[in-house]
Length: 252
Picture (cartoon, rainbow, N blue to C red):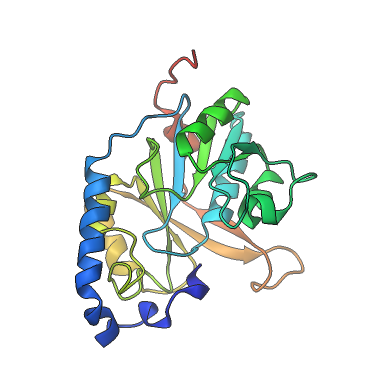
């Protein structure tokens, strides 16, 4: 999570970031090549991936929930796919919030399951197939943008307006999961969340590259402060119908 990341990742690059640059360079070469050369299999139904450029959270789960609600309004049956981070289960599991606990499936998966059909699986392809077999006609994958394990029809990167991409260095010298240029090649849109200008330069670059830019604000529920559980209010978010443009292959 962002709060667990080294504090120097989120300030101007200093001697620590530059000292770790050789390792970051190697990490970036491996991560970038994996993304560039990957030819992952596609799920039987379209997949929207909600991810980040960087390690840690930047509103992915609230975004996934908001997309699911929009899909419901269109008459679709969305399903959430999660690795179950923080949970102990290592088998493909349909999450039942009345039965499972966070220590088994993870906090985020439990939150998603209260909204709709959710599967946790370490192997993304198996999880996607299980969701399709359970009746999902669109899959919302929480994280996994850089993993290149499952074909993505629409890659939405959530970007914290206040933090941006931190010092701009790759792990372990910074928070980036893969080179920005390679990530930019694979994403469909950026969702800017919150207030601030740290992400503006990257957003301009994405816009010049023809990527869609959306804006959202984290707003409290009635009676809650922003330090409590947040919800997303979207401005200009794309129509979910655009994410299901791929013809759905037969499950058989």
